[in-house]
Amino acid sequence: MLSISNSISIDKPLSDVFAFVSDQGNNPKWNYYVRSVEKINDEEGIGAEYLQIRKKDKQKFNVIVFKENERIIIQSLPGQRPSVRRDLRFDGDEKQTTIHDQIDFKVPLPKFLSSLILKGPQKGVKQNLAKLKILLETGHVVLQDGREINY
Image (cartoon, rainbow, N blue to C red; front, side):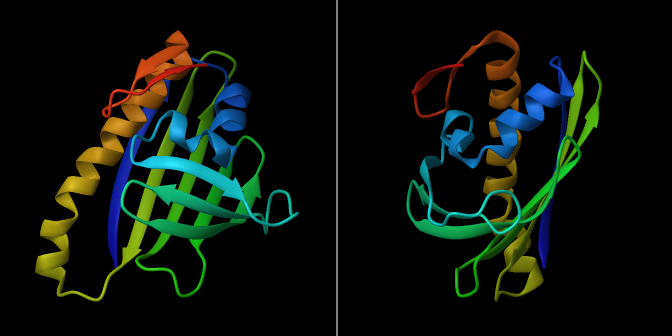
């Protein structure tokens, strides 16, 4: 298994940041690689399933942990490639929030090759979190692909 870990602090209340990030439909507003996210079942919180259209592929995932203002874990549904699990932990107060983001990938490659392949995604994830910070703190961001987003 390969992992990408990042943390970022955002000058916004914990409850606001959690509400925005845990709404999977907001992903395209701060992740340039995601084009759209559509909810595909009627569940809320744990068990909610989504179809994510990305720049070059599609992924189905579900929410497996949802603790208000603390943690959300999403994972790709069985059969999706690559198999991905994203664990977002939130710490903060009424002034600032820190997000701890860990993404685990199961890829059928030798570890040395997988590590090389993850360099691009690791950079992209870090940039996306920086865009999230800008969007939530200023209300406006220009994503890496040129899309302008207002919050």
